[in-house]
Image 1 (cartoon, protein in one colour):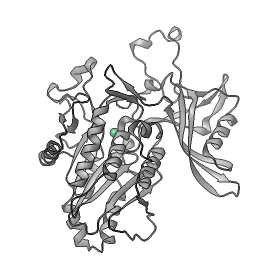
Image 2 (image 1 turned 135 degrees about the vertical axis):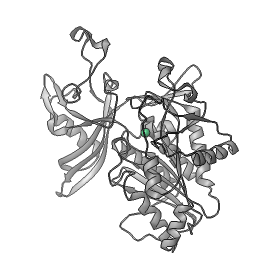
Image 3 (image 1 turned 180 degrees about the vertical axis):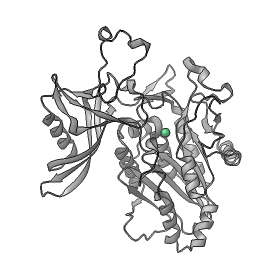
Image 4 (image 1 turned 120 degrees about the vertical axis):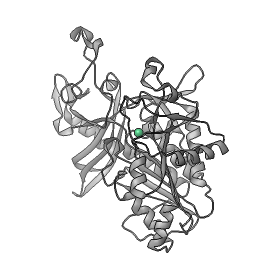
Length: 419
Ligand code: ZN
């Protein structure tokens, strides 16, 4: 199964589904799944992947000795979204009302008046009373978070601050909370005795779509950061690494909430997998250090395209436009991993492959976002840089990006993993 970016976005309404689809693409390309609890016997010339929490993936090609270093591409599987507080569900004023908490830094109002589905993971007791988990995707519009009518909120156009506890509960049309539980059980496709717990997120049911007079843009949920995950997987599958180089991709969960989880970037996960690749090649501790020292990392995460209605939010000298090149991100305080050296190496690589670049530095009077780039770079001691494709409306329920930029991202990931 080779998913294009539209299919990958539509089939990945949660980090769990993004990881599952990445694994499926790798498996269909001949990659084999490894278990962290097993002994790893790797065959040269073969690809492998390993997951944590069903929501993050490390994948690599194994070519024996690692002393030529790793080429590492990273992205993140998670996106901001309302997460259901299922135990608080009630039948209220004619609707099944389910309170939410916000995962990550979303734009609250972007969730209003949209047909919403539900996706994530449930934990349950099966018919034999065994505790199990299953991914679920209620892939049809079952919920809404409606606006309050302007007649009841005359000041709405002066700015709307929604209270996530009291004013953003999801409303499901139905007769009782049991209807929702039954729908979840059906979506899990399992024999369920009791649902014990759940990690369920609302998502925009409308598929990714092409936008523009020239069809050059894509409007979709979760462009941040499934575009990077998709580019990393496609780049790795097509990678033909130079002798001695080990290409690795890391699709991390929990970037949006600080990465400090076992499956996040601020964990032992990636480092452990890279150590184990060297050990599988019968390498010594010295070989591990040498491999790390010869490595390079490319952190891919979405960038801000200049917004024509808010152009003064960018420094005009660093104002990326969609479809005019991949964005290289720089920050004096190392919110991005980029240095002049890592950026210039990447620039040379992109020139060789005919990939255009733009640069981003945020306005000096505004705070800067960050990525997993600096975390992975510091944790591994590997020099890195931050790049990404430019978006409008980052962290909205739907974001807008450039289609050509995505093709360039795949090309860049592939080149980086190969050379
Ligand atoms: Zn991101």
